[in-house]
Image (cartoon, rainbow, N blue to C red; front, side):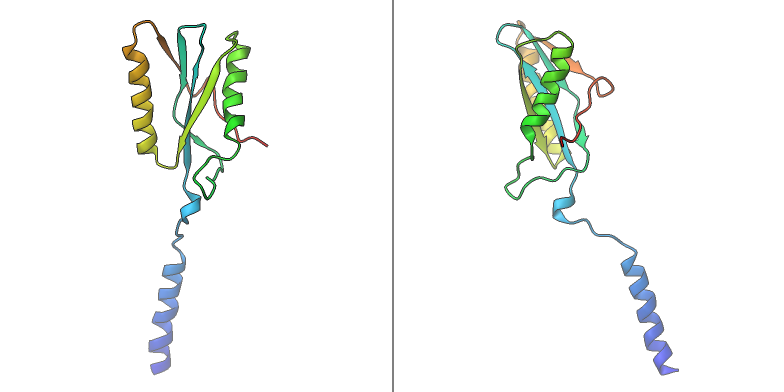
Length: 131
């Protein structure tokens, strides 16, 4: 009987604790947005903040194949007839920090009256994981 009183609570406790999953540091969601500007055009395009599918940052904190994400935005805009654009991608595993960066960049372009700031909606363009 003493054995049951000790083992049974231990088994129940083990079941309860094992039902929770703990997120590892490397398993954080990575968020990104893109900005496209041109030296010969006054229009600046910017995407929505998007969660990147199954992407992990490197040990140094960089986004793997980030140039491929910039190329996706460039290709999208070229298909829309917007040629010779420079595309940049901003990323972070903290949505709050990325939102702050997004607001800082968009405010900078919106203050400049000679620049037309256009937002690319999420349903129009979505980053995909490069192969």
